[in-house]
Length: 140
Image: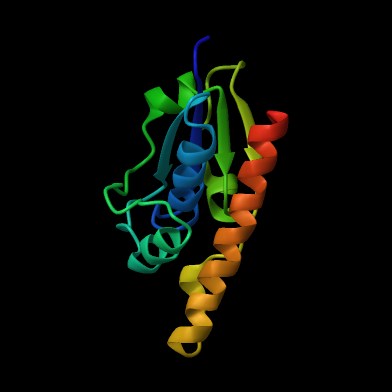
């Protein structure tokens, strides 16, 4: 069976889309080809790498990439993880592409002590993991 291509999009491809990418590769990598990108490339957020490592997923080798129109138009699912990416997603010229929006808070905007910021990263990570588990189980 051919793997379905899932393309996770965010504003900067530094946190949420990277976390979703990492979890789907771990939980459904045999069923899906997984890619992620951003409207811009902000670099991989070190805190995202750290909280994913805590969850047993290594995303340290991921790159922060800008949306590729070719991947966008051949994806089976395009999933935006932040409102800005949802509103500014390039036009998808393939009617077969299913576009969904899963909104999550941006942990990179968390403020406070390092412990409070990391707690926000863990909260968002766990929310994304739950949504990925649901997607893998239900295919939606």
